Amino acid sequence: MKRFALILSTLLLTACFCSTALAGEPQDRLKVGIDNVIAILSDASLKGPAKRAERQAKLRTVADGFFDWRELSRRAAAEGWKKFTPQQQDDFVTSFSELLQKTYVRKLEKYNNEKVAFLSEQIADNQAFLKTQVAMKDKTIPINYVMIKHDKWMVYDVVVEGVSLVKNYRTQFAKILSKDTPDALIQRIKEKIKSLDAGKNVDDVAS
Picture 1 (cartoon, rainbow, N blue to C red):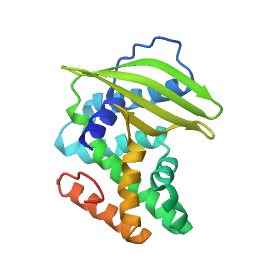
Picture 2: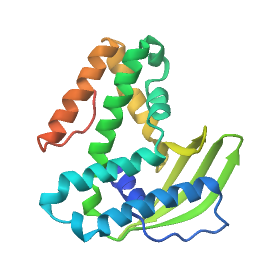
Picture 3: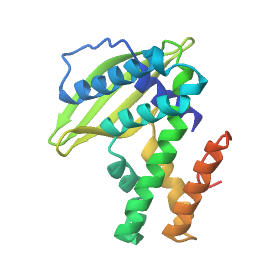
C-alpha cells in the first residue's frame, strides 16, 4: 500500500506534463485537479503545521472533484456489494473514501518534484484508459489511470506497475466479507481511520 500512497500523491502533485499526443477530455480533467492541488500547496496562507487541518481539508475537496469514490468503492467490493443494504452502501462509500483520502493526502507534503509523462490515452464510450510514467530519482514507474464518464470524467482505478488499486482492496474486502458482515467491514475501515488520526501507519484493512 505504500507504493499506492506514493503514486497517488504524485498524481495529485505533478506540476509538469510531457505528453506524446494531444490531450483529450479525460486527461484535461486530471490536469485541472492537479493544478488545483498545486494552488493549495503554493498558498502561503495555508503553510505550516497550524494550517495542516485546513490545508488537508481543501486537498480532500479537490480529490472529491476527480475521483469517483462510489464507482471505486462498488468495484472494490465486487460481489460483496450485493450484500450491502442501500444505507450500508452509502456508509461504506463514505468510510472507504475517507480512509483513502486520509491515507494519501498525508503523503502530499513529501512530494519531491517527481514528474509525470502522459504516454497515451484510449477512450471507448464512457471509459478511458491513460498510460503514464513517473520519473523518480532512481527509476521510472509505469502508472495507468482508469476513468469513467457519467456527467463528467472521473478516476475510479489506478494501476501501478501492473497492480490495480481496486483489485488490491477487492482482495482484502473479499477476505473480510467471507467471514463477517458488511457492518463489520465498515467498522474495520472506521477503526483504520482512527488509527490514521492517531498518527499510526495503516497497511491494509484485513490485517
